[in-house]
Length: 561
Image 1 (cartoon, rainbow, N blue to C red):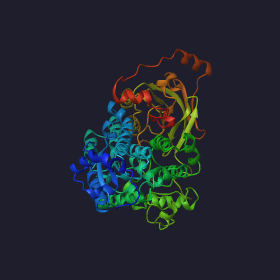
Image 2: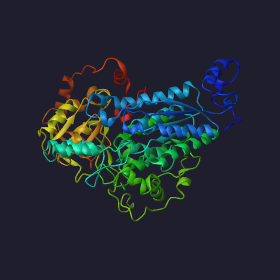
Image 3: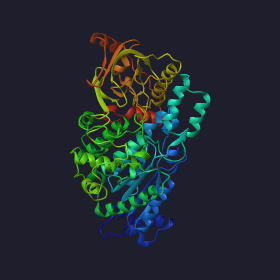
């Protein structure tokens, strides 16, 4: 691809003053004629840290080859990752959300510093997606996202397994419902190879949201990493990006209030992760689009859950792909007037144009995607609750619950490890409301996920009968009577910091209420006596994150000044 229009990269390649620059390009194998071709970044999240990212190199290679074959100059650079599944339940998990910002900074820095004409971002584990998208939106050059793909299910005794199976098995083992040998067999068989965690957890939720945004190719968000179609999709993504560069089609032309509403509608319809709330708020901020936590509730009330997917449902992302994936869901939502078909996509076509060839209804021989008139739940599953315990709002995941309403005594923990120990030792009883605090964006810092304790509750058979509220986050694999992202957080004196052991707490998703049942005068007395804890970190990325991050209700971003 050559173009007669002035490329952005001309700022670094053209004119006598740029002779030193070109000299360095020659060292990379460039020829004189290459300087009229677009410089296309390939942000490669490949690593051998985690199976989520271990299969990305062949996708990056396919993208590079397609760029070079179709007239672009590929410029590969790396982005880091943290494995949520490996870091979970440890101090390392506090680096997970921080990595979102680091990834965004990496993409923005390389694209802007090197005057790239476009960028293709490839990622796998959870924070790769929002981090990459935020970087793309900040740089605002023609961009496309390539999801690394989901993992295939593990198998044991005729049953599908995934990473959450192992976390829940830990709880079953502690409760005496699973032998040590049984736990070991699940551990050995749950993760069969490369790809991101297999349910509708955070990675697959965000990849689906990106497809709904129009920033990834149709069907690409639910492909398995190990299949050749994923490699072919990466190459096609590169070709589409080159066309977008020619058209000067930029991320902020695509990521608008309407397309974000489309993405949120899809997240609700597929039963996606609570983390989507935090990440979409951050993405909207990077795009300069007005979108608040209350907008999620507005969309939730009109979009049903129609996909029977784990963690609270039965199927995995590979099953969803076979059933028609995101395009099938979007076509159904479009026909029902629940999404905006006029939104532009990275392909240069509107969403309605992309969906024109998709069937109006899914195949009758599958049960993954249900008709809109026979949903799993009549309204979305990510409810925004408010009350004196969370005046800014918090997120409750209410799928899989018989009754998302309870009042019970507070069991208070200032860290995750002591809470997990209490569950595994049998000290948490039906009717209790666990309060895990000082785990927010500033207090953690880094807002770690609580998959270990929530999975232990499920494994102990307490998923419906014990509530858990936290100013931290939940894994996309979490389900049960759980409420996260409580804001203001404990570290800044939010009401969650003032809860005492035994206090009565009400969680009521029907009334959108999270309430500490203590008189206002007593809360005021406790607030006057409260003292902020000393920062857990005073140097490095954790200290910088804690100092700069915004509240969870605005996405926990670092540049909301």
